[in-house]
Length: 169
Image 1 (tube, rainbow, N blue to C red):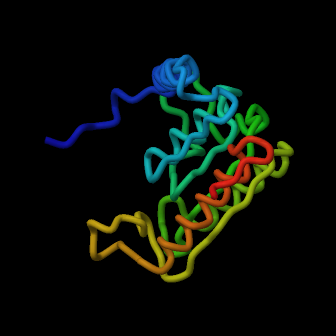
Image 2: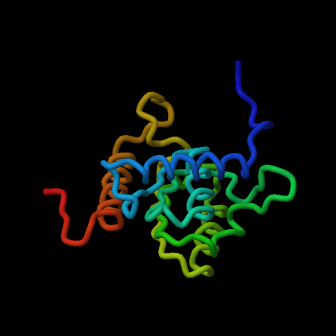
């Protein structure tokens, strides 16, 4: 049975993300000043929404997240229009053959972030479409692009979440 997104609402999702961040931040083993958010596909949209709704996130990675230009719930604002609320750097990972989000959508995402003064870096991959990091889907998976995107993601997180002077070594 497929789950419909009819019941999905941005305001409910923001409340869930706030609760998750508070839970993490309250753990002894977690430094609340070094929490990031990353999502792929629908989760990429959720990562953007989280970054624009909670200043507790210190880094955000959006991997081929679509529908950032659409609000989910009456009276809500599309997340793209909330870019000025994002207080952390944002990285985007996208396939140039994707239709949702399309390359034009990605241009809009990047323009909104730059206009809002948000530090961002976007990586776009030729020969890759939506879900190109899904190793369980032979039709979509692009190993070379996926490995490069993962390496760039780890570097982005290390640069933005590691404590000053901390290294991975």
